[in-house]
Image (cartoon, rainbow, N blue to C red; front, side):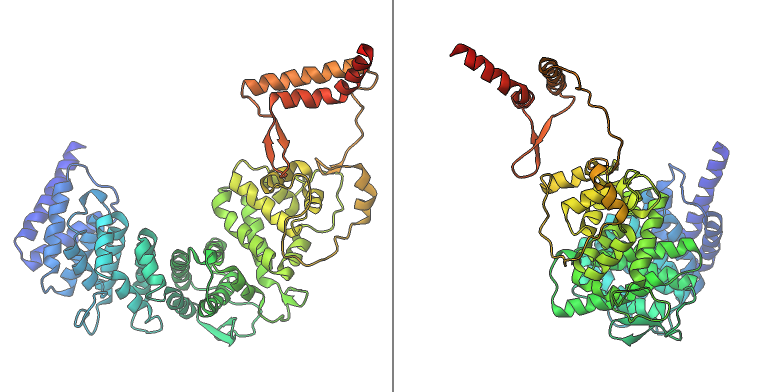
Length: 557
């Protein structure tokens, strides 16, 4: 093992020696050998950091010279390999080094920076280097910000319809834009505002997907307008589209939390129409389709809520899902996506919540969406023999989530169902059972019943015949019909009942003092509040104590 390590170190020294001669041909041969050997190397031998840094410095020095394209490419390939090592990034993370790499990537600012006929291979290799370095080094991110890297990237993104740039250039432009906007909040804001990022990236997405616009907010694939079934997107188009969706997620992160003016709303609606097309499209393979849909759903959740109406705007066509005169195709796909994630069951917080939140907010703001979702998720109740959480219907699956160990998951599931019930407590309990509903009701201060103020239309909650017949026998806590249980206190005297009640109080009191449980009560505001020991004694003795006290009072008079 030691022998192999020594040989590797010698090889590195030999390459360094050849580079130090300054001869372009000798350097090219040495670097090509290194690049071939290390092309799949992602972990590096410790103790060689100084040698790797020295090689990095020499390669950067070569790139400042007027090199033949093959030598330029070999230098950049070496930098790409060396930049995988976080410990040897110093030669590449300086402002000067970043400037050289940005120039080779064709992203520099000023006249004469990029040759008239760009070498696409060199550009792609420089972009790959920049992706590694920016991802691994804060100093490089800082240098990129100072050198206005995002301005160069935005300039080339505007050329999204020009044929001179191939897939690799476009893809790594997008990947670099994603990385730098994910890692630097200031650059994210610059792209969003100064460089009008949402419009710029919407146009790039439009070009990537090859869209045409039959109406203001209605999208079709060029050449397939009016087709009910579109062919799958190609692999390269899908890859670029997903990178654009990820960048847009970064730059719109706070959009749904702030008010937008008319111009911004039009921009977001335009984007929303493209996102609807993404949701309705497939890619090559189910896994890739689901990945694209996932990025689309994440981004839809960032759009200002009033702009989500574009999901319902396309006209109803043959084969469309129509409800109340509205095209529900996109909502149907979102429900199917939600259920698929729900059935998978892993990493629910990351995978399920974006679609659950999106459907909740859409239902809250659009009456037709809420009614359609209610029909799908909470159809008229017929099964009153099983608990609401038992079964394979979508309602059962969501009710099961209401007692999930993750607070965010259970809150979102409960909120979704609560909105579908128009935030009516009685209706919510009817579909979920009081035991499952208690968490959300306690958080909202609704344990005493009533309804949260909301902007909902009036519609009937028509009960099925099965539900009407069973209603008097349904246990509201479990939400199902249960056999009558015998009264455990039947046949006891009042004294025995009081004794059992006080025994129970003492047990609660003991557990409370040992901080194993905390008895609670519903406060005047409808929220849960702590129950003190003396209150517990008072509540238990109230039923029995009043009659005993009145007897003892009469004896003393």
